[in-house]
Image (tube, rainbow, N blue to C red):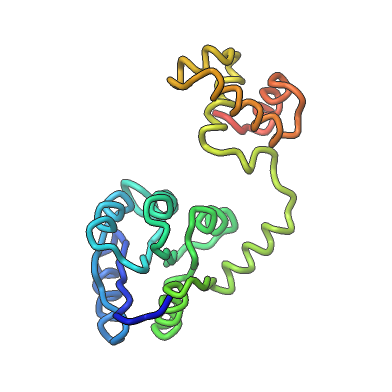
Length: 213
């Protein structure tokens, strides 16, 4: 990605003072410009569509819609937009979910201005930047065996929940308003991912490991 113009940056944070501070920070660099702001994840999706940023600085803990879900939706709708999580929170699960949602960077809010500027430039060029603590969290998670069902999609979890309730494929299809063949495909994927041989075993495993409500 060759830079022929300032990097277009959007700020998403529910605190106005943080947005103001980040805006002032961006104005100090000639190769960046602030093109949009949002106070929550849902607003971020609307603003992103309007301003078409190159990089989004995304807070994670926000009302209405959090930054992880917003990142997932933005990554699906605007795959060319690079997302950097900029947060005060750090735990293994949050880091994992944020990266899986499509963020290219994960930084803590105590990052220096110069480090943040370099992270924005790196993200613009498609290079990830992780706070050392975030990298350590990912490495720790990689050393842990995956819990059953960790790779199930949201739809597969929904189907699994209905299986656990004793519904047949036809009943699940009616409930979800999809075809029975689609349900069969989901069931097949669920059985494969859980490493079981039947829907009964899948339901038993789901209940044992609390994979469904």
